[in-house]
Image (cartoon, rainbow, N blue to C red; front, side, top):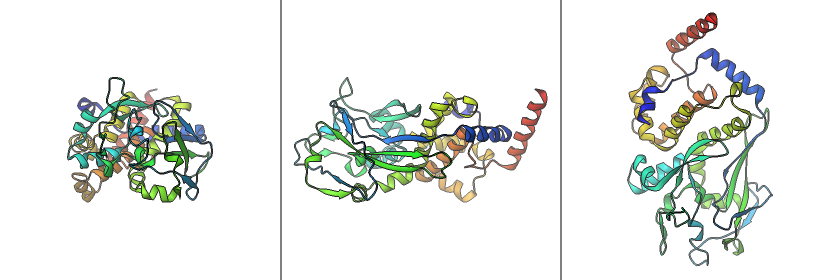
Length: 317
């Protein structure tokens, strides 16, 4: 990944950016993405076909005394969100590179075709226990467990209708054969359940990442502007931003990034130590690079050079 810092092509030219936005607008259609779909074990999962709004109720409870306790922590399919990684690093007092090496495996999130880190399971077949599971005590990182674990047994999906300004998020119920939590008597609203699981902070910090995933679902079907996918190099940069804030910080401060983009001086100081702020910058930057969205501004001299180069290229052709 370190070679990519020096080799990355940087921002798209302003004229190409305008053309790309126009083409994307022309091709845009309804986009739906399942963000969290539950942890699927050996028995598979049944998904309730009914959308659950925030005030709808579900019947579910998980506790130490239930007969299936810890079963969902074996062979689980857990994609780690960017904020998951920050929280786990804080819990373990480690940095992302070490966490990625010891506790994750690289994967492709097929819906979007983007690289992600998944939580490693024990066993040669990857169907053993989560590495954070103590069979007697349960989850050893429970206070900082990933968003997928917090959502379970709910799934989260998002849909953006054509011409709509904002996306619509909704939930659905996931039932695994082994899970007895659905047979418990506890009934609560979706809002109460999410509040109990402290999901809101995760959703807030992951919002930019979720929006990128959603748009890539559409792009994988339609192709991006002019029918093209984002480059493999850009996908590697996305993986860096999403999983390793230390590497992204080096990119920001050791490449030409700060010479290219308008970043306020006080924000630059904040980015040196604030991982959450760095994530927000990373998401905005990736939206600009991947989708040509005006989420981060180039400096005026860079804009002028880009416009001049675009005009020269057009004249030469």
